[in-house]
Image 1 (cartoon, rainbow, N blue to C red):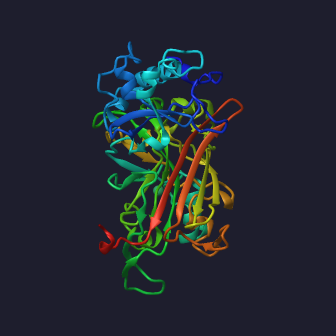
Image 2 (spheres, protein in one colour; image 1 turned 90 degrees about the horizontal axis):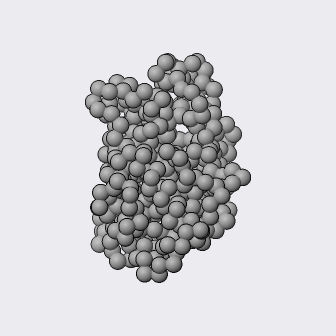
Image 3 (cartoon, rainbow, N blue to C red; image 1 turned 30 degrees about the vertical axis):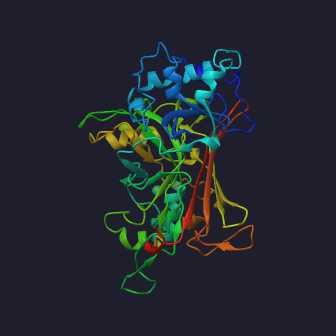
Length: 430
Ligand code: CA
């Protein structure tokens, strides 16, 4: 089916700023609460949010096989489960409805009042009910940096790392949309030089600059997904801040891996940008040496050129961009991750989420975490307000951005923004 929604020559009758992440070629999917307190599935063009539930009720999706209530839900899981053909039909139709040459909705004032919202009239929700969340560790630069810090240059990469996309099962209950503040976690840590742990606030709260992909129902128990088919099951991507408490993580992670240092919060951008919208930005995956095993071998361009940045905004001050990276640096691509995840027959469901792992680039200003940017805190970063950061302070807001850009079009994810509050205090809870 043609991706007519991606036509770079199309313009919309809705206003779109020149540098917007959301031109008519993007058409992401999200869930929002409207000014009337109704929850609905929607999309966004420029700074206008569009109620797809209302559009469907008014007949604008006639001819596309959709159940009546498919967009009147508080998650995208059922729509995602409808599969790629339906996603494409809906995106193509939305592009038609809002095309500058189509007057039908444009000239229907009554319908527009029902369907269109300003961004300040809505509140973005988590777009999917995330059943299972898996986090990979797929950036060679990141794995090398972390390995060098903790095991030395000679043993930086574990022997398995170049042979498989290493990952672990995370926790979905603490995944939140952009804008929701997070409390500094408390836990056990082992003070330097001591052999007795202490309990208290984490002193080393960090961000991890990641992307994550959302899947549709893919396979039954026991059935692997071949790598050539893997992308068919990827609905889209979000920008992802996988918060980490480094001191808690360091004390707890041997032998079973990350636990409480990782599962206190992870923040995603609220609009899922479809894999279809990212088609024009495919690039080669970095050369893989040694050659991976057969089930991980692939043909064609399976990586995506997505510019990434992370900034820290201290309370009352301007933000300082601390890192610029790119999703294309990932050593293991998403198709390989999904093929590996299911090679043992592990089922993947609609609304599952897979984090890429911290995306670090080759240069020190492209590292995707404070742990790497400041090299364990040895080289603090100067903020615009004159203060320094080794890790994230109370009341800092971490802001991440992601966008693709070529000569024709910019397709972006908007922002992921989270404020780090002081530790939870029962007295302050109303
Ligand atoms: Ca992570």
